[in-house]
Image (cartoon, rainbow, N blue to C red; front, side, top):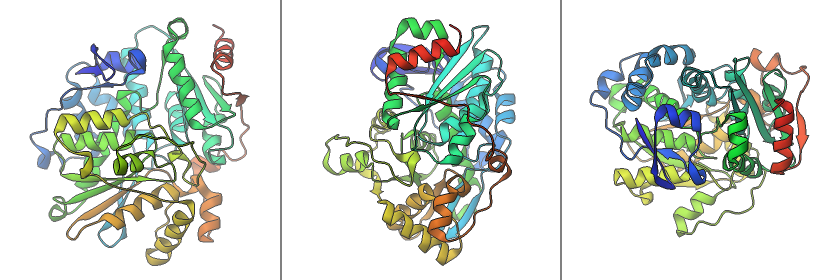
Length: 426
């Protein structure tokens, strides 16, 4: 698989090189310049998740990784069911993995791929999270030999249970609370990648959706969702994706480029840079605001250049997207209305995706919104809004009383650099 730096097309890398490098020159993202459609989608849809996913990923990646099939089988050990939430609308529940979020698919795949291609060199994963990425990455790489992980997250701006999954592991997992917003965490990661000496010294890599392996793994569950529909409903499918850094919808659009019949709805919260851009044509990020749907609290989405590159590559139009944004007040009302109507419990991210899907679903279409995290990860808000007591799954219950091992740093790159070098004894 040949990938290009979207900011410097002269930089070309293989899939394995892109996984190890993470990001290209000038903070450019790696992406293919063409995607060959699959020839046998109907046949693939009849296969089990792991077997189908291995074939899709082999088609995309090629022969670089001989153990790819074994990697996929080992990574995708949990289900991704669709559950009826309303008339002609299903939830794709992506929270049945070890950290109860969709990021488990990409993080577990990346961890295994990286171990297979890194050789003898020690690596340091530096990643920023607005909620679920950090937990999934921490769990996927926990106690992996030769790989240290540093997770940055905005202090007080992720849920308590999300933080527990990141900050209580210790050992090769370093949790850093940044006194700022997610965009500042992301900026520090980007700055680190521009620091050539530091990058080489610690063997720097990133597990954000910056890393192409994360995105390709996520392509798989869009096919899994359609495979669970009755055959007569597979022709007019609409996915509504709760969008923050826009990696998840990029994966969906790759699935579409491969030939999956679907259209996509962009669902955002009050951090609505993309919806405003699609309306006006002007890219004007506002200051990030904290919301109930904290994983979407991103004003400058990293993966948007990949979306635009893919749209151009495929001859699509940005005007083809339906989109919307919702306030916290609207989100709470949607959660209450859906629960009262059908009994389905949606946490804030899923509620936004559901409502904007419902607002844009056309006659004869089947809607699927992505449930990206277990409602229990937002227990305090869900309990309050729905007046219920969401039980904690074991993965969370086991962490409630665990001690946090995090440190607090200012949003300053040199401070972070000093901390990382000291923590890793470099």
